[in-house]
Length: 348
Ligand SMILES: Nc1ncnc2c1ncn2[C@@H]1O[C@H](COP(=O)(O)OP(=O)(O)O)[C@@H](O)[C@H]1O
Image (cartoon, rainbow, N blue to C red):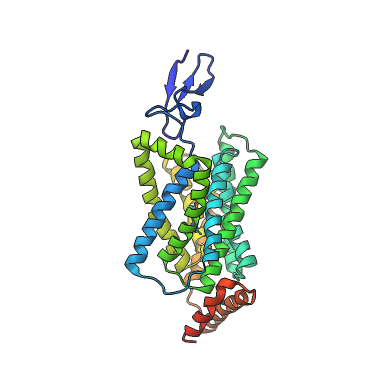
C-alpha cells in the first residue's frame, strides 16, 4: 500500500512502500500512462532543443538589428562547432547518470586544458608561458579545492568508469568546439550574433534530428502541455540561457575561447566558495591554498592582458596572427578562402 507520494518537477512521482522501497507512481510517464500534473521529465533532448530554438531566434533578431559583418561564413566550420557544442552538452548530461555531480563539476573544471591543447593542435594557436602558467594554477587550484570539498561530503555516490569516459569525451568535444571557434576567428570576423546564430542553427539541425528520431521531442512537448508550470520554467530557463549565450559569444569574439573558458570555469568556483562562506562552512587550509592559487592565476592572467604591449610585442602579435591564418590556408582549409579577402582588405 502506498504511504506517501513525492512529486518533483524534474524528479519522479514516487510511491514509497511500507518496506521503505520506492517505485514510480503508476500514473507517471515511466509507467507509460499519462496523467495531468505528475510524471518524470526524461526528455533531455527536448530540454536542449527549446533553448537552442530560442538562441537561434535571439541571434537572428540581433543580426537584423546590428547588421552583418559582410563576410562569407565558413559553414563547414560552423557545422563542426555546432555539432561539438551539442555533443559536449549531451555527453556531460549523460555522464551525470553514472558519476555524481561534484565529479562532473570537477571534471569540467579542467576544461581550460582541452581548450588550450586543441587550440595548439588544431588551430595552430600559440600561447605565452604566462597563459600556460595561469591555466595550470587555476585548474590545479580548483581541483584541490573541489577534492577537499568532496572528502567532506559523506553522501558521495560512486562513479563508474563509463561515466568518467563520458566526461572525458565531453571535454574532448569542448576542445573541438573551441578550436573550431579559433579557426573561425582566424579566417573571418563574424559578429557576436552571426557566431551565435550559425553555431546554434547547425546545433539545432543535429538536435532536431536526434530529438524527433528518439521520440523525445514528442514526449517533452506532451509533458509541457500537461504541466504549464514546467513550460514556464523551460521558457524562463531558455530566455536566461540565450542572454547568457550572448555574453559567451561576446567574450569569444572580443577575446578568445580560452578567456571564455577561464571566466565560465572560475565563476563556478566562485559560486561554490561564496556558498561555502555564506552558509558558514569552514574552509580547510588545503582549500584556502586552492583559493589562493586560483586568485594568483587570475591576477596573473589579467595582468598579462592589461599590460600594454610594447610596439615590438604588438608587431610580433600581428605577425603571429597572420602567420596562423596563413598556416590554416596552407593546410588547404576550403573554407579559408575568405582569409585572402581579409588580408587583402587589411590596411597592412
Ligand atoms: N566556447 C563556447 N561556445 C559556445 N557555447 C559555450 C562555450 N562555452 C560554454 N558555452 C555554453 O555555455 C554552457 C555553460 O558552459 P560552462 O559554464 O563552461 O559549463 P559546462 O561545464 O556545462 O561546460 C555550455 O553548456 C555551453 O552551452
